Structures are given as C-alpha cells and as structure tokens.
Image 1: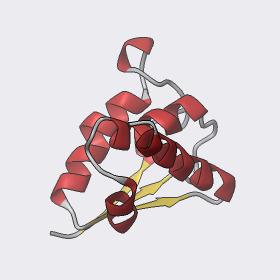
Image 2 (image 1 turned 90 degrees about the vertical axis):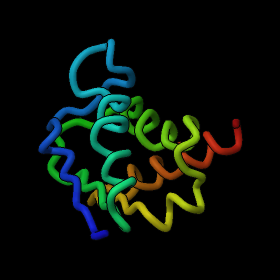
Image 3 (image 1 turned 30 degrees about the horizontal axis):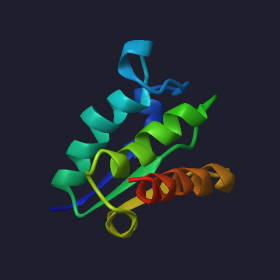
Image 4 (image 1 turned 30 degrees about the vertical axis):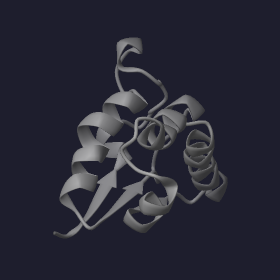
Amino acid sequence: MENKMIKVTDYSKFPYRRKAPEGEFSGEFFRDTILIPALNKNDKVTVDLNGVLSLGSSFLEEVFGGLVRKGHYNVKNLRQKLEIDFDIKSYVDQAWKYAQEAELNK
C-alpha cells in the first residue's frame, strides 16, 4: 500500500453539489467513486482542495460527513488515514466538523 494524493481540481474547480442526481461534480459521486476506493487501496490519502474556485458546504458535508454517516469510517480511523489540505483552514476545520457531527448523529 502507498500514499495517494487526490487533487479535487482534477475532479472539478467548482465542487458544490451534494447528491449525484443534482448534477455533475457532487460530493456523493466524489466520495463513492474517487475517495472511498483510494482509502481502501492506500495507507494514507490526502484530499487537496487547493485551487478550487468555489467550494460548496453541501459538497464538503456529503464527502466527509458521508464517509462517517454511511458507515465507511469513524472519525478516529478517518483522522489516521485521511489528510485534508487547503490553504483556507476554516474549510478543513468545517470538513472535520461535518465528520464529527455525522458520528454523533449515527
């Protein structure tokens, strides 16, 4: 196993939707088709959000809260395996907050 870097800008510069039926570049599609397979195949995964031109809270919540809510990970295990990189730290904090809220509401 190895470390994997996922550049969100390779997916979209405008990731903002929650669910796949809402249209392209949803958090659900990103989580299920890109992030979960990477987490399953690698020891460590970094999600690099730098370079996005817009970032919807619905996208962040569905990706990071959804990982926990859908039963793929708990926050403790996720923090060991996943790094979120973004120059705007408040978005990183918000992503982890969504994961923690999902765990509390399970």
